[in-house]
Image (tube, protein in one colour):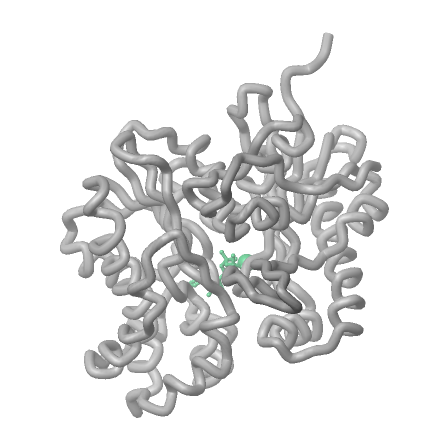
Length: 378
Ligand SMILES: Nc1ncnc2c1ncn2[C@@H]1O[C@H](COP(=O)(O)OP(=O)(O)O)[C@@H](O)[C@H]1O
Ligand SMILES: [Mg+2]
């Protein structure tokens, strides 16, 4: 008898460039799922530094070419680390689904020689992952959606619909390098967009001012106070007023951007961290006021991504929403905040393997539903 489930590994590394998150998941044919295990692997320091350069548009084609294979090897290592940790055997894994590492994402059409296109690039070569693990691997999810007119992002809402259903109006708010929200409600089609920086500016100034890679648990921000004047200046960024669907990344909120805004920053170092932490909270709450609440009265926000561990950020969010909307995390639903997105890619990959549509055009702006992802067979 054919089994009615697949055992999959989903892998993701986001714009924070902190490292690879992976999860092992049993996916039933009706798309119900059970998380079996998870594993994270930091990028080696030199790799992270190189990726930072590439993501900030500093590097040449040779660097991109090489890093595609280096990152592919690291994703393979992460998958093998997870398999080892789980005690399963390699041949028990049906497939790996890897988002890869975005190093460039251009959601606007650009024209060369009369031909125009949006574009995106995720490295971490799928053939390398498949060859080194011996497991069929799916990757390059975003290109197909762009090819049919979408932005190739966000892709996680597909999984949000499966995980959370629509019993009450909810906002699923991921806080990775960038903040992204998926709105799930019976009042409207599922929609989603990037709210603005998530941890990206917090990480940047934590490194610059305190030489740490992030503000663990929001400790530094908790010691500062929000500089309202600088905050108002930061909120003038035109991206926040753009009407969804919209997506952003390091192409906008990069090192140059951070250095530019730093010119007007407060003197106290902790105030800088507190203010950019509040910027994340305020851009989320203002985006909901402008673009979400007019469509549906959300009752609950579910936070995910590494930012869900930032206690000061959660405190600020509660202040911004005046305690009127309940703020939970994925952990409240039995899903580790840090592995949620890797779970999403396992579910997306399940559809690729089974030839089912997996983009959500109301979220990406694509003209039609397609099967995203390319497969390298074992
Ligand atoms: N304990 C913590 N306290 C505060 N922030 C954290 C904590 N753990 C992780 N983070 C933040 O989360 C980021 C990574 O989150 P992640 O969801 O992996 O983002 P991405 O998808 O962009 O890689 C880190 O760069 C850091 O800013
Ligand atoms: Mg990450």
